[in-house]
Length: 157
Figure 1: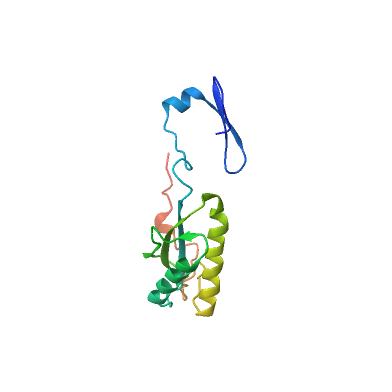
Figure 2: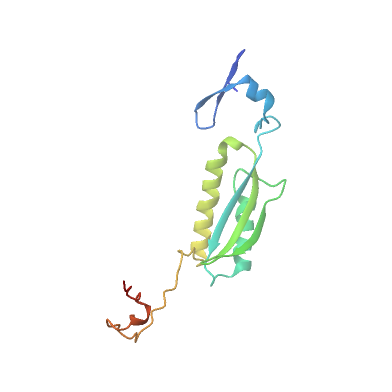
């Protein structure tokens, strides 16, 4: 909140944009203040690994990374879940808290960079999306008589 005026208030977003909000909306609508109680924020990262990966090893590595990463608070404790068996990958969800919401991008970037480094050390691959294409061979060629049964009948007048 930058300025509270008689008719409207000026709010500056995290991206630096100024938003003018009529005070009537502030009074009649729900207002979420992310910084009122403290600076802590919860971060969620979803990451997929190849199906050939050892899921227990991946979970152990992710937990170790969250336990050592600067900026990640340990109370509440970070969690790693195997959350989904996707089309191209085994997906894990990391839930953790940071102590300073302003540092969220820096801390998240640090976590992701460390994940990439640890995965490379242990030969764990992050897969590209995959689709199987099945080609059928030996299809009979069609000629002009193939579709005679579906041609519309001629109308006689």
